[in-house]
Length: 330
Image (tube, rainbow, N blue to C red; front, side, top):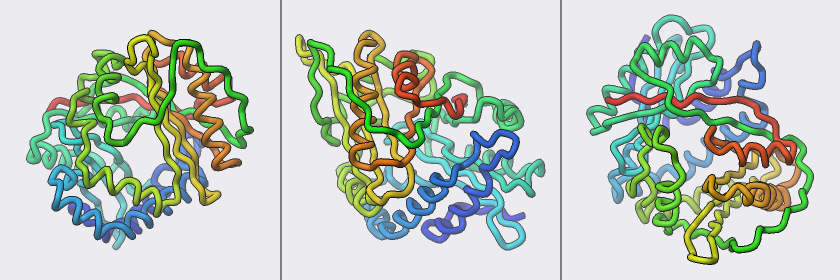
């Protein structure tokens, strides 16, 4: 077996097929990569390949972007059989282990461990102080592997899914609040809200600091271009208390305009304002379905936002899978 560093864009196409074949769980089909997700992954990787020359320019102009896609692939029988993909969290010293996967026929041979250990060494060389990843709650072999490497559970997040969504009616915005678009450049609003709402235990490995939210100008210019190439419509909003103007929530939707793939919504809500949950989830669902009907809609909700989960369930979202977040001090 050969273990080598990821090479972009060379590895983009074979990785797409390998990842889709890796994350299949016959005994737990709800964990598996779904058909619409396979299409979305394939389209996303093709889009990255199209704009890769611009990404290389961006990495020259903004050095932190050089740590967006790093990792290792395991090669055997002339193909990629295992992968780890890691990336720096903004410009902070925290890194995300975004993908760890080994094809079913090559498991239990130490490939995942070797690739993770190499990635951890790489992160340390790049100045990382902590890292985190997500593992399906119930995937005991993977969780035990991460625990043996020193990772510990510190939080959880659940994927909720809604198939064949109907255009919902939206409950009225409670009095005393306003909703407006949140510019991509307004990192201060995002940072201030997260500082107030994220529990201390969830900050151990995911820093709530400026470097996570203040993105380089070149990246802010590149993201709309990527959305255009991927044919996605994306908008984010902020909710403010009109009495003093402070942000109490932000919400976002991403709609595929291709008629294929998956739509997504998100809500980040101050727990002190539970009365906003139903309106915000309904508003984002209405926006995404009106722009891209019929496609499945997903929302990720952290464990410490139960009121948002309740609002999603009231709109017929079903919990598909829960991920345990595990962190490691490097």
